[in-house]
Figure (cartoon, rainbow, N blue to C red):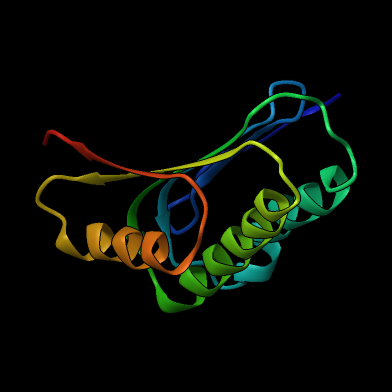
Length: 127
């Protein structure tokens, strides 16, 4: 099973997808010109593992500095796919990190956590 690593740029987050460990981490600022291209790797991976039950917990970590509205829609798609996996009795956990002083990112995580029925941790980072 491959590991996918996409390095961050000034306007795109880094992405790590480690299928063997059922782990995905998205980190950085997200205001890309083409959000589809940036997030499609994750959406494709979630579709690919939909019928693979490895017995491992699927953990997806979001750690954004900035998230524009188009990126937020892609994050919503990812979370919806996680919700579908969770409804199929898969062990899923979402971790949402935010700087303790960043109300926008914190509220985006709170909104997502209230709208889905998936284990969701909001984690404040000390600045």
